[in-house]
Structure formats: C-alpha cells, structure tokens
Length: 231
Image (cartoon, rainbow, N blue to C red; front, side, top):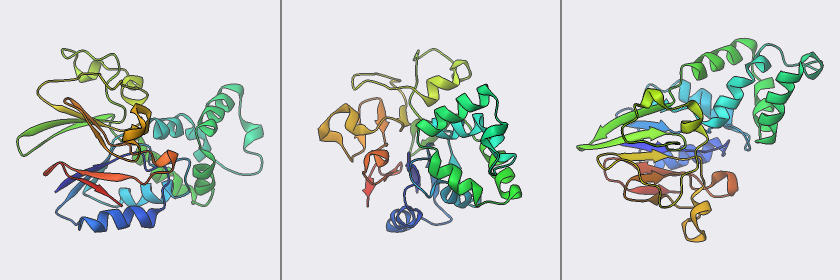
C-alpha cells in the first residue's frame, strides 16, 4: 500500500508510529510525507531521523524544512555565543523561522552531535519539491502546498519554489483534469469548520493537512483505496 501524511509539525513520535501501526505499515508499503515534519511540536527532528533510516519513506520539502535550510548556519555551531555571531541577514532569516515555531526544533538540534546535524542537513538538501506517482491507474502529483500561479500547460520545472511551498488554494481552485494534486500546508479547517480535523477532497485536489498545528491529530491517505485513516 502507498500512503501520504503531511504537516505533522513535531507531533509526538509515538503517536505517529501508532497511526502507521494501525494500518500495518511494513517494508512492502511506501509512505510519502508532504513536508512540515518539524516546528511547533517537540518531535520533529526525531521523526526526520526515523525517516532518514527508512528506505520506503520519502519526504517532499515543506516550507518549514525550507526555512530550516535557509538557516543552515545553525548547524555550524550552537552555543551560548551563537546569536551574537549572526549578521542582520542571518538574524532576519532566523527570526522568520522562529516566528513560525522553530524553537522546539532548535532545541532538538542542540541535542544532536555535529555529525548528526550534518547528516540531517545533507538529507534535507536532497529532498525534492514535488513527486508524482501512479497507483491503480490513477495519477497523482504530490507537493507541499498545491500549485501557485497554476497553469495546466506549465512545466513543473517552471514553478517557483514558493509556488510549491507557500501556496494557499481556495476551495474552488481547479487543477488538472487527468491527475489529482495531493498537498498539505493549509489546515483544512481554513476552508470551513465542517472540515476541521479531516482530509478534504475535491474534484482535482486533496488537502491532507488535518490541522496538527491547530491541535488536531494527523491522518493518513491510502492511495490504493483512497481511504482516510485517523487516530
């Protein structure tokens, strides 16, 4: 079976494992994680390290991982004199990341060895902005936030990173007729109270951000059956 999850935002690692155990996730299955594993909660780095060790788990870059990468200087050395060593540009980048919930992630980073932080950074630098799969004859495009400045004739290489990382589609947004776009980033409750804590499906896209950052548990989408799995 092939699954997707998104925007776990440092959700307790054990509970994410409980969700995978609920579907019997094993070595013959595959999991796509559509970004924003880190920040806000305290287990984001732990989740990333688990993912790095799994041959059947792929991360699609989220805007929070992109913010971490923009602050890759935090991997150089984190100590009591760290902030005083930063110039205004780096302080601005770090401030933006912190305003988006970076503090728990930075705390986790301080507990890692230099080599562990380096390995994590190298892993994130290789993470794609999107992927595409076909399951049971149905085509899917996987991004973190949908497609900003959408044009059905535009090649994926011509989308700017922000179009895939920071986009906020509307409920009546239409994408492709021949494939379904799967994304997170926008908690489904933003489309209406009736969607809070739930995966939202439309004719051309599916939003799987159930609002973990807003207090709701994450959920899995199974591509083989289109079943939604909740804790």
